[in-house]
Length: 530
Image (cartoon, rainbow, N blue to C red):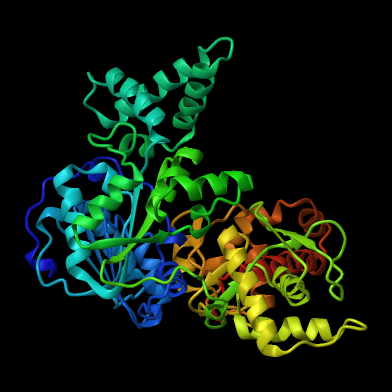
């Protein structure tokens, strides 16, 4: 297919490279989980076909293909330099299940086939109307009967302020043709206006916050967002109407908890029930309430019948993770007293269910690692059996209770649910092995992708130097020696002092402790494979 690619005019994404990372919400696992909860029968992610429209340099698609070796992947992008980098990344990782095609969306070749999952992230709002039409057309034509498409886009009403600032910047840079100079001038104007505001009023407060955001972002983001030739946000109902014209229907948001009204008072929810005729109208009114500026929407074929009841028994086939811990004192598992659990992202839930409280206790000890729902139920039941005076309940009843709480926690953003368990190890072996993906990424920058498909920044230089060494050929002692040879390691006060006094053994002890701490962290964050 690569040999028949047509000549394509240079893209703005060739002139200014777009910073790209793995995005958890685009992984097929996210779509498969939500589709399952809403009554669909999506393809298992371990054996699926996946298309990414606007794949860029492969920083998102290659990690997915790496983690799902039995699935097939295709990336489509019009920019030549990013596609070349994507192919280079795939070749270096030895990926045989991913292909990258340089092609304009309007001229995407026929014969692409059917895909279980289609992702189009960061494209829809930044292309002309005819290209948006083709994006929807591709989703309809190439999506499997129970497939799921992901499309992200800038949304109104939140983007009205963004558009106002964008018009100011475009006016200021209109006389500059060089992209770097445009970015420089755009940032300069944003900083000038933001810092020139006097006594706060409604306009000054809003405009300063928005301009400060433009100043903080990566300059290349600014070029492709605020200074892009096209940047057309949509109201949610307009986007859904567009999808409907192409035989697609609204499934959900990729961040499931964004669909809920938990942050508002009960009377707000009652009013929404009164003024919204259906879930589409309710979502639109929620956008008004939240002043939403960005959406990540999942679509499916209009012929699919959805079940929005969120049945608790659906959780039994999923994988669960949560950072939630009890607020205040340790929960009384034996009683029916209400305990509040709060996650690291601020989401919270209150429950008096003994099995649910025990499960949260198990999950917090495992975080960020997931656990299969049946195993979580067994471990939570084992915790309860150790509580004096606690009578074990019926397994089926506790399964339904825990399933109900898991779904409530998922809707609140407190619990993560997954359709499969990534192939990582949570214990450090004698000769640790980090994923080949992470080892390659660590030699090319500060960011690596975990096997949970989360982007992780390597702020610790020791961890960045350690990862490439974890290929299974070195034991702890050899790894310690390798790290001790590093200049940064030898400059650490404790190690420097030991080496200055000729005590190599003590220096090794200090370094071995740091090595072990890093290995444990890498295991917990899903970066080790054996």
